[in-house]
Length: 161
Image 1 (cartoon, rainbow, N blue to C red):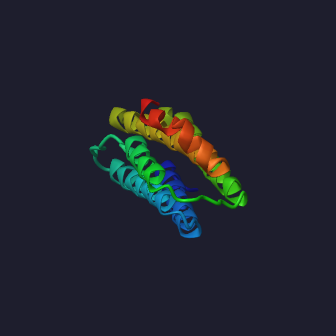
Image 2 (cartoon, one colour; image 1 turned 90 degrees about the vertical axis):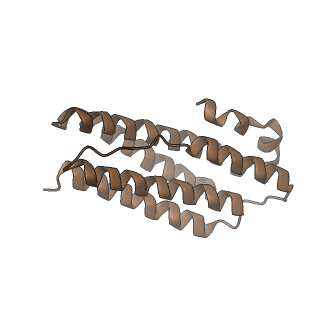
């Protein structure tokens, strides 16, 4: 029987692998950057969970939404033409499912952790997964209608989430 820590670590590992796979599949440099950032966030989560078993680790606040916004600004300034394969949106929706499952898992299991710090960290992880979900929502919008989405500059509000 897999314990709660092992399960969470496996979940983060799977998420990381999926994002790295997605990053390899996109030709768009900016999108590749954001997907790699998401993969790195999962690595950070993995490490926090691993250390949480035996100690109270510090976890820096995520800056992913601000960082992603900066990448979108660069994409907009680059004026490149975008052609995305519509199948890509399916892949990003699957990533959203992964984030949602992770968040639900953390929220559902928070009460099972013995230490107060573990409970607090798990709730923070859930909050970050929610931000990832929101970011993916924006990626889906971008891939679905790149020019208009950038024109509407909806991404400027990203970090207000």
